[in-house]
Image 1 (tube, rainbow, N blue to C red):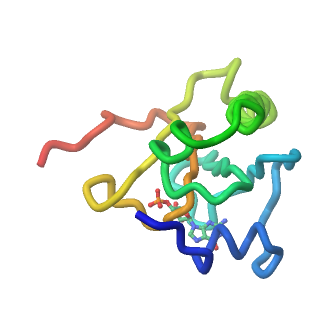
Image 2 (image 1 turned 60 degrees about the vertical axis):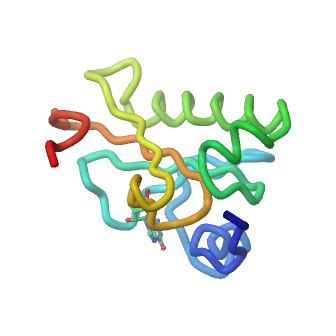
Length: 121
Ligand code: 5GP
């Protein structure tokens, strides 16, 4: 899938849409989800144009990969997810994953027991 620069997270990165920033680094932005699914619901996105996890994991630079994961860990710490009572990191991709925004993002959810990973069909 080709990257669509009009997606909502690209617009957030360009400063066209406001966000509640948790942490920003040279390569990564973390902010609160606009429709939280749990008491804590953060999104972590790379600043680079990557469509989904597979694209990011295959094509990002080592510096981007390290920065993204270190920033995610720092966000977990800042929001009391880890150390804490646990959390779930989710990344959706494509039609089967029901990805809504085609810019790679990691959901970090916590603050309550989150139930089973996947509902039975
Ligand atoms: P996906 O389904 O692509 O994995 O998740 C996209 C997430 O982005 C959803 O949880 C949705 O609530 C969130 N989202 C969509 N638009 C905005 C926005 O404009 N601002 C913020 N902060 N989150 C958004």
